[in-house]
Length: 161
Image 1 (tube, rainbow, N blue to C red):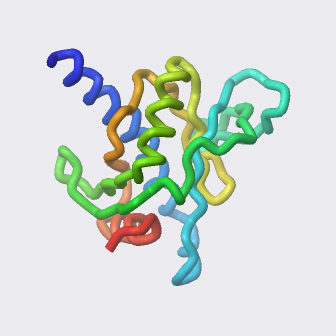
Image 2: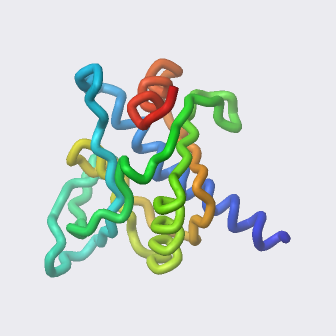
Image 3: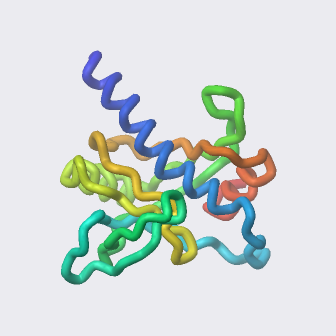
């Protein structure tokens, strides 16, 4: 039971990082057209150059990383999203992956522990955290330094109310 609790904590941290950058990307940018949905992708990445991978700049660190052409997760894998308060009472977004997205992300994170996962929003790498543990649950929390309005806008754009 303790192992499961630790895995859940690690999974929430990883997913929190993944989703934090989704929220961070909305600040300081023009709002998309009313009905436009941001393009969200998760792809395998590496600090070293790899054949077939594309060099991209991680906006969070300024570091150039190599990003796989294969999309692991996308908007299509997000079933719903809603603005919530995080554990510290700040604005956050809870995103729920659909069954296929949950399965794909669980397999991806299980197979790539110690590797990087690039989070790409509208063609820009906003974060590339290292996968520390498998993420088996399809419910993820997006927390970061954004306003309640930005959290609500992100949730709506990801398919929430």
